[in-house]
Image (cartoon, rainbow, N blue to C red; front, side, top):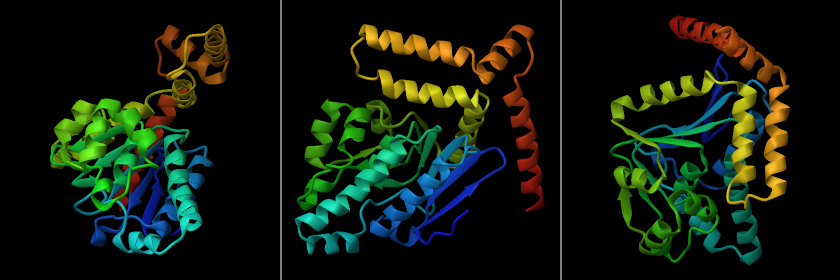
Length: 279
């Protein structure tokens, strides 16, 4: 994998890619350099057909404090055109994470403030420590959570956003779970074990079907059930039924055997265990 300064990346034999915010000395606050590195890493992983799952996590005590103070100071000295270009890069990061072709899993510990809430909202699944906390803090310093708003409002709903965008209150993991920003809460000690169990659940499924299912969600979400949409969903199920993995999955089910992708996954799990044992 490419070497980065503010993040670290890896991919294991199972096809599990990791994207790690790695500035613990500043609570993983992000600036234009980290944003650029995250975009590069997402592009590399998206182009890699071996990637089955993407984990987004961070090193240190906190997931991310949001925007770096030095970066915010520099933006205050820029003109409108420069700020527009700068915001466009953050918007590009959010869109790439949101549209990533494979399943994405955010693992959250400690604080996730400002734009970090957007990163969590862009992931398909979010698991957090029961001690995690969140804050859409922008209005406290005269700003708004503009770029992340489509993803956060979609995750939390308009009603909750009308409170937390306007008050900049800090809210905790249980409330984030209730609002739909998170899917599961666990203790700090269980965080990585539960996350790995979720990864195993995802890996047990057909790689092609998982990606097609994710794309299906984007196609049908918030759309009226028109004849065109009905025709499109019919086309998609017919197409995947005659695909190689669709045929293999149906045959395996009818023959009461393990599908080929699970056999390959078992071999990759064994290799990964062997590699860890030698480390």
